[in-house]
Image 1 (tube, rainbow, N blue to C red):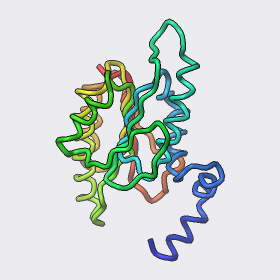
Image 2 (image 1 turned 180 degrees about the vertical axis):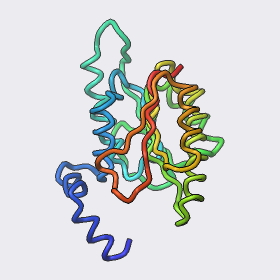
Image 3 (image 1 turned 120 degrees about the vertical axis):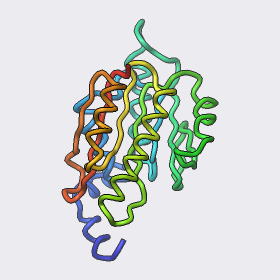
Image 4 (image 1 turned 45 degrees about the vertical axis):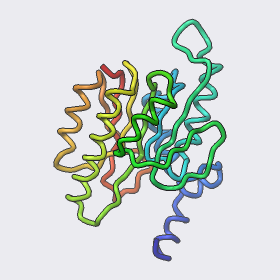
Length: 212
């Protein structure tokens, strides 16, 4: 990050608020808005976070998972404990009671890791993962869409029925196809560009509710 970009970043109101509230990154407020709109954490105990670095989403996930153990301790869907895994190729500073896995999501070992850590289907999969941009919007879009499909395909095996998937995408020529494929796998599909997203960004989040 250049000195000028670094200065602008540190003047960003979401960055300032994140530091003040103890979150590792401004992206925490994207997840908070998604939760506010779609209540994705309702009865979520087993949660997978993809593209976790630096860990702001994991911080929030743990907060909600802990609350859920008490809030939903009733005769309806409940688990005795929460399980959270964060996956990224980048380093993540450890968080108590959160499994950190340094691995590429497209690596074949991911399935074995998920099977050994989660003893049942996952309630919620969220991904803020992004490809390393090359500077060409079309190429970046295509590569991000491929990453999105890798994650979508993973949820076909590991996400429970009626589970939820939140996925960062880039708008572009293949976004509609991905949106349509979400509809084949989820009963309700929403798209959102959170307020904390930078105005110049083409990122958008797909939210799949109630997996078929």
